[in-house]
Length: 157
Image (cartoon, one colour):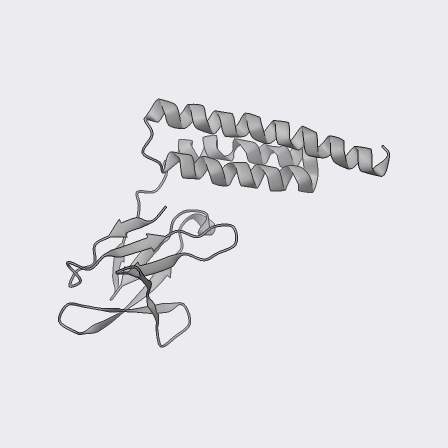
């Protein structure tokens, strides 16, 4: 899911942010094309309507778990509204699998956490977000037990 943003001086341009995934960094797109690399690492170049080039950089939020802010020419742009603390808690319930399932539980829990945060960023109603996130948590537990049974069966335990 891409998030459209508005950058001062770039009105009329289609500027979007694609948040990071488990395997990719966030990406900035201008009129459907990835932003040009800047002069330094982690910098991107945008061209304003007057032809002036400006520098954009990512500003991580919440240890890199949330959609980052974008710093453009020294001004901070919130790509999306940050999740509330209780949405983080609710989304993080699958991570509790790490305490009973070690590495397998942690991996499955983190995947469940990622899906739940995406649900809370969706356009569903508030009730539907909590129901869908609870479904992800239940599914994570089921997947954990199936994975544990497969691992135990494979090692003859």
